[in-house]
Length: 376
Image 1 (tube, rainbow, N blue to C red):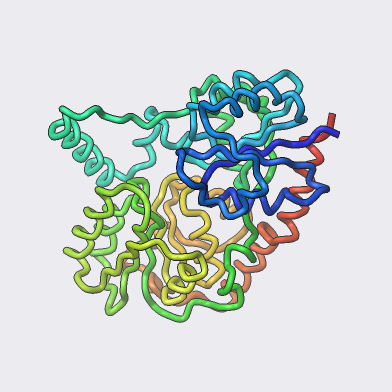
Image 2 (cartoon, rainbow, N blue to C red):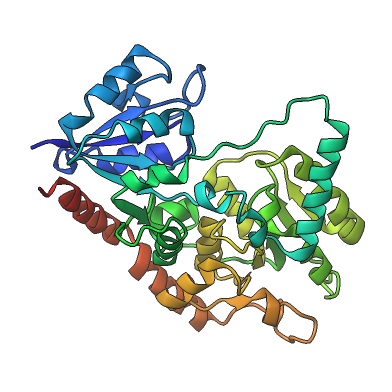
């Protein structure tokens, strides 16, 4: 039987993928294509064949694609090598793409539609300043895999069916099939806090220093509500450098010492431990960003607010968890705006999350994925 080839990159998700599909019955091999010439950070890289871009090994890889029954691309963010790879894909080799989000949500024709009005204005001003003050510098445009390359993709892999619907419609690929896939279960997501609940009254906002977090619209909403002595925790350890500087300036002006940014990267378990001090989470994205943070907040018993415009809201409704919307519920007139959730609601949310993303469900789904991709 021909095997499945998983092509991973030097990203945090790669170790999860390698661990999930490394058992003999998963019929998988792994190629790791680093984004640069330095040392790779993937811990399980010794289980992969490392192939550098623009190398003879990459040319050999293209020639040998027909030796596999399927190729799984983890993310589609690297046009330099993914475009020629897709164009070289032989007939009869199935192509599955794990949808990360940014490869489509960041496309220039739709990126601004995921920004709140205030954040859209601030982003436009920043872009104008770059053009005015950096006009002597060559502007580096973010590259995307051309849309026509997605015609080679047979399957879209994601845990959110609504993401698949979006991708299928945006790419005009009604024939592209859907397979459920998630990098980690709720047990793995929670780690050392699996048996814990939030015990503080602080507020958690966002997940990264990205403009799509809509931080500036959020602080305008929050300043209208009395937060008492609650601290506001905002993770800014990765993303855009200008936002790492600008968000703290704005938030400190409004919140003073109550603003507590997370500027340094910390391991997942330490990150989750910090969440325990919060009973409120605000994730202001319009796109499906920060889903891991949202699921963690729900599991820990937080009152989770997301935008009704967010694609994730449809997913949460589908799986039956209780959450709240920024537009209708995050307001001064809501007497329960920062109130702890009843234990019955916390228990219900946990039951729904286990049903949807448990380790058992993830393993069963991965076996079904392998069966589908290896089927002749």
